[in-house]
Image (tube, rainbow, N blue to C red):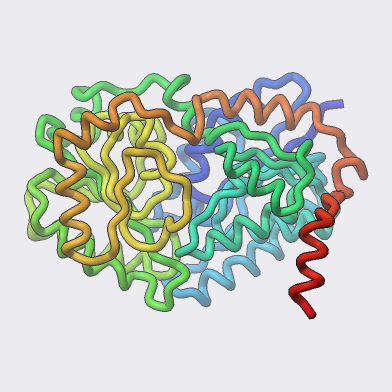
Length: 396
């Protein structure tokens, strides 16, 4: 019998990471792939990106409407609840053999919670990373403890999951699946991009990827310094919509207002993965607080300025320069990023997040892992005697 594997995707961002695992699972003779789309995929405000999945030739097995038309933390919390109710009915009928989840979006708590109650084993991609300035950090760790198979992007992340008590045989360093695009997807050349996006890429171009800082009470408080710094940028500025988090509408409105005063800028609601990766290859600089700036830009030796606390703690390649959310700090980091010395120093750097073979590893494990109680029953590693003795002594 074919192994039924359900994959949940909630947004353009995770779909770009899931594309090659989905492609390889869809042609695997022993796999019955089920794709579940929810969240911003189904939102006209965020580009109705479920159409991109269908355009790529995939069948959507279920659409789950759950994203509230909201710009608040309460809206985020209610979205989790609505998704949980809907997915309980869906997975109760579907009963897949495995459920594949990725990364750290808050919506992912819904399918994980439902699977836990229904005794459905979970495989999770990109656990073990750190982003201390966002609720994503807690979501990611919660998903780790609810999951039964783990695919990490880096070796450090694998070590971290084992340190969290996950059995080593369950934890596989695969690399970030988004990097498979670099090896397997034909990227667009400059002239193709210019025609597709109606922009002139002969001009020096900076990409701006900035999301709400979800751990902060005011999720857009760090944006003031970013926009103040952008005022002095001579480059053409290409913005991308933020995630569907509390504060996203404020950021979109502010970006549109900012661009009203400039002749050389654009904001894109969504770009497919190939177009986005092709832009990374053509850009001079990336600025923002997106995980893409840390996980993907090293593959192009693209100077990247990471602003604020959102990605605090995440493993960094050498092309990333951190800046506090202050005008002077951002401008100083950008000055370094633009320098010839820095650009020379990052040529040929290695990306710790992978080599472009993640999908092969993920599919191999998903299609051969044991099922049933052997997978569901997680055993915790024994405490080291030294650590236990020290803990007892310290508690006295």
